[in-house]
Image (cartoon, rainbow, N blue to C red; front, side):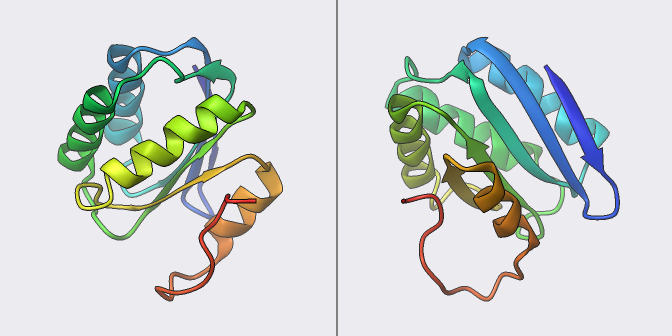
Length: 132
């Protein structure tokens, strides 16, 4: 795992690698939550895979994220993926976590689109990001 921090935007970009297990994702999230509370997060999974995660595992990860976020509703979190399978699993996580996640969440294939989403103000409307 490596990351870039933009303190001005309160945004951390986390790059993960390889096939990711729920334990590896929880460990990465724990580090981010403790070191950068209140920062929005872009999880760059273009060199990683979440394709083997089950619905139950995704729900467990959403519940873990709910407990770990210190400023619910004030941050955004997104996945940046390269493969269709990972995009589908990311969208499933988004759907599973819709009522659980304490942050605005999206899944993207394009880094510029994700970056733009983090720059937007949350007005509660608009098109669903990352669906193109």
